[in-house]
Image (cartoon, rainbow over all chains, first blue to last red):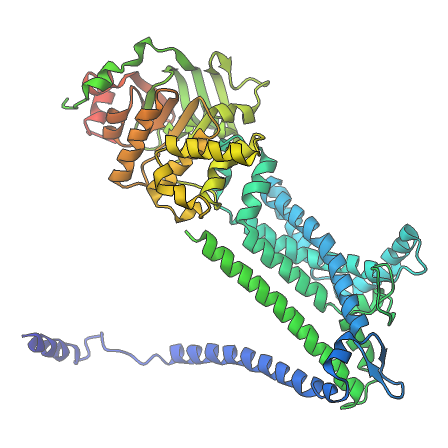
Amino acid sequence: MLGQQVKVATAEASPDNGLRRRWRIGEKFIEGWIFLTGLLAIVVLLGIIALLLKEGLPIFLDTPPWEFFFGTRWYPVSEPPTFGIMPFFISTLWVTLVATAISVPVGVACAAYLAEVAPDKVRETVKPIIELLAGIPSVVMGFIGLMLLSPLVQSAFNLNTGLCGLSAGIMLSLMSLPIIVSVSEDALRAVPDEFRQASYALGATRWETIIHVCIPAALSGITAAVMLGVGRAIGETMTVLMVAGGALAVPVSPTEPMMPMTAAIASGIGNAVRGGLQYQALFAIGLILFILTLAVNIIADRVLERQKRKFAR
Amino acid sequence: MNMKLSPDLLSNAPACKKTRLGVTGVNLFYGDFQALRNITLEIPECAITAIIGPSGCGKSSFLRLFNRMNDLITGARVEGRIELDGINIYDKSIDVVELRKRVGMVFQKPNPFPLSVFENVAYGPKRHGRHNRGELEEIVEKSLRQAALWDEVKGKLEQSALALSGGQQQRLCIARVLAVEPEVILMDEPCSALDPVATLKIEDLMRSLTESYTIIIVTHNMQQAARVSDMAAFLMMEADRAGVLVEYGPTSDIFTNPKDKRTEDYITGRFG
């Protein structure tokens, strides 16, 4: 009985009554194209990792890893050369710390203002302007830091030179501000209005509602925003090269001239002999930077995942 | 009319009770649009007053007048007087935050915060300056017991409130309101997102709360209004879409002996 039914069904479908499956060449082409472009991104990423490993790892045959990481002396052209990247690593930490310490509170507060307080008109004007800030070339930011900011920092803190980690960090904070504001604002606006209503109805003020309801509810998005901002600060090169001062000592305070890892690579690569020890060492720094930004991204991802699970409806 | 009302409900007629909220000649506008016209009624204390009427007649807008939630809507404007214990709550000297402490609200869709069960109930008291952990624990337990939720959640106070069922979430929202110790509780179709069992639990809870609270409930459900309320107000839309009060009185009168033809047509299901 069942077999009979199936037979009848196939018998009816076989003539071309318009239901027969068609070979859509355009669909297949698009599918293939999207697959290829996706593949390309992965291939490029693997290629970059392979290149960094191939060019960078050989330095550890000459300089042991612990000497490379914890060494405080970077003399690539001495005899024998020493490659200790501690000064660069600490410089990157200082600059990123200053940038984050400024851009996170300012950025989140700005986002909270735009999302929760500002009238629509203000938000629609201000947000694009802040996002425009992201489009300023980093060399221009470096120039501003050099000409405008560093004299101010010098006189404010009574320093020998205004070209220091603090100035670089301040410029970097301006550069990571747009992404923090933009992504945090989106996250806050995505918080359902029913939470705000519930909070107001319980007699909470607007400030209490923002602090205790809106920001916690948007925390995953805000965390992602902060991580993106930190990633930007770690990876930024031209501005720190121009503003951070470029000293090779391990900086003990952010008001000292310093050279973050990105600047070390940029300033050193021109003089390095291809395949030489310095060349390898610079690639190894690149590898560490890559791992650092990757770690930041993975942490951000994890935080997002956990928040999603926690607050899933 | 074939509406059965339990005798104890009839005996609970609130005619003798004191007026808690007085509404006199109230008009509500959203920009140019008039949402409510010339509404006057008196809401007795320690009773449940139901607001019924067809969709869009301004029931929710009317409810939101009592804790000034309409203030949050740009362009909303109120004329007339609304008095809480004889004080006009739309007076310039009124602090909205204090008003909302005394007039709590439960929303249509359960809306617990994305926090733990404990933090949800403790939210109000914390905002009003209570931070002592022991004191908060007491308030949370008391409120959850009042909301008939304690036995179901006592083991998982630290879990996310969003993991609770819809009915539990709504009772949590009621507990959250009770924790602030209001005098009046506004309920905006509190059962419309719940199944019949959860609905009955909420209704039982409401009856048990009338001893010490004045409750105003907006409901679409005629049986619910008949089951739980002491007083009922029937609102309807006029030709220009503004809501007007058609009839107001003890629920038993509204359901068994309506004075207005429109009320009768509505509650017998001829329209709406």
